[in-house]
Length: 225
Image (tube, rainbow, N blue to C red; front, side):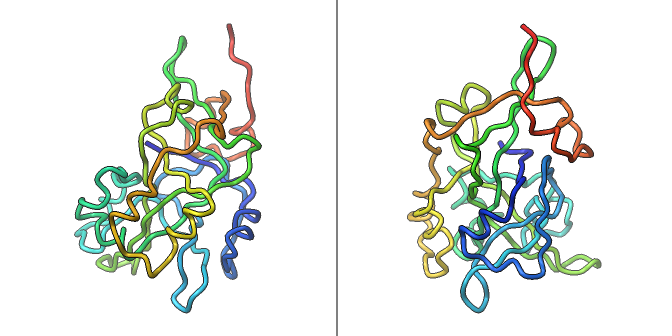
């Protein structure tokens, strides 16, 4: 699964994706947690691409209560084309979730140790996501998203058996193509990322609390032997 992630320099990936971020505040984030509003990129209504802040935890348009989103922060690549909560979004409402790392916890002596997983070189990347618009609440429409996960590659498997789907440049273009609606072709893009391009290091247990949102969360630490 992917339950926490980071986006410490959002400007670079937004520029790389040629997305319009006007009106959206892009601040460094060191400990992004479910239910928070964070930037995603999607196809714009008038063409091009737009950055919008959406709530993490997908609320299907047909849901009776928004609370369902708390349980839908991730969607499995293996079943995303079949589950009622995701099926329509797969063909109509796809997005890229901007990040430069994500956290996983490994059980070690002394408890669960958090690790920051990132690309070699620590450049930003885009995770495959789905979004939806919920209009049944009194507080007005809520746009929300989920991150698609797949089997971990060999590197990430040292920590966890799942990982978010990280899309390379070609796959990003296809994922955001509004003309592409073939579920089978879309699902074929949802593969583990190249393990040789992934690295990780241990970080402070500050990340255990969503209230901790500061640079110290991503700084590497030395583990006691």
